[in-house]
Length: 510
Image 1 (cartoon, rainbow, N blue to C red):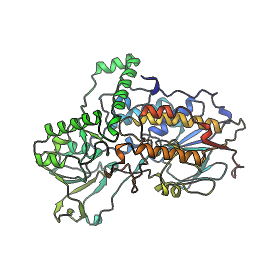
Image 2: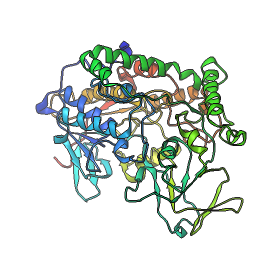
Image 3: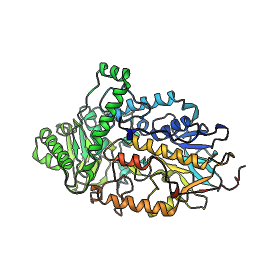
Image 4: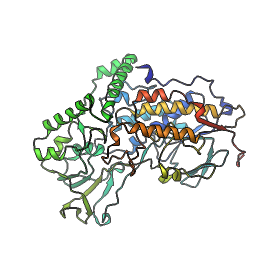
């Protein structure tokens, strides 16, 4: 595995457990679990993970729709410190990823540090510590709060006119209804992106008819999935160095794709475009359907998708691609803008998530009384992707501008965890059992944001293609504008001159 893929532990002395700061971690997905594992490894054991559900897993616990799977190769979609030689396929199913996360929680003894059924509604800093309020009315305190909720947390449910008139079930892919029998039903699937292209092949042969509502077509390249034979899994188990090399191979392949997201033409972009066109032409015989499935925006401007069977499924006799916009729901189905009514028994919303929607359900207030929700109204941003000025000792994992379009976000999470631990160590190093307050300076945060936005102008995401990465003002607050290698170098250690370290006030709860 390349050296710059390894997340090395910080070098200073380990924390003194007797005077360890109190750390609250929000969420038990990959981010929260990764944070907890590394904290314990570094000697910080005074932490609690607050999880609203009754099990770990985050997005892989929530998303249980048919065909749910990762679009990053399995061996790269796992913690670097805990590779899994037992992945059964090149691209893991959601269930297999969830099983891996449960095993990690058990292996690293996280369950004893998790409080399940604890949904946070507000956190407020009183000048000394964070006051955390829960939906059940209870409260707790912490010196540091780490949000492991990620940037995609709450399903995006469009406000369709007349939705209340429809007599059948309507649900989002992240709220899958296991109690519904699809056999012989007419199904409307609204959306045609990542989750939709996984669902369609799984349900198409069980139902009477499927209408797929497509707003814009997607760039879809072959998935080329395959299973790992038992003998190969045994080799990976017996020779961990080989598994690490295999992981490093996939890391390099994924990084090699990054130039596809540069503005202008280049060899990688031409190769990706050719793969899409060849895949489409081989799979779809009808020229009219091919034309409706061909994007008219630059490749990479929206998420590049992978599938081996979506195009085949779309040609089944019981499937229609609907490209007219939705005017309203009716009692029997959906009426499109051309006046046609499409009957349906079930409506599935494959409409994605609201980016950085955590503030829809959690009120974050700094010591000066400022709300992060109000602060972000002028632009969602975080210094070095992990902190916002005015909110000391509050960290965001997978925060603004740390998402990717080409590689594994687990690499980003681990880099952020390493970075945050170093900041926590700086703020809790007074030896008196009282944590100082660390936050980025306004000047440093502003300079970083200006640099990020300037660099994003050189990427294809700056094109006006309606991607969810970009807000209504054309500002990209989700994606990182460089390669993962670049991010790992940038996040090896904090530049302390970018941060302000202040003594906490006397605690009101002391």
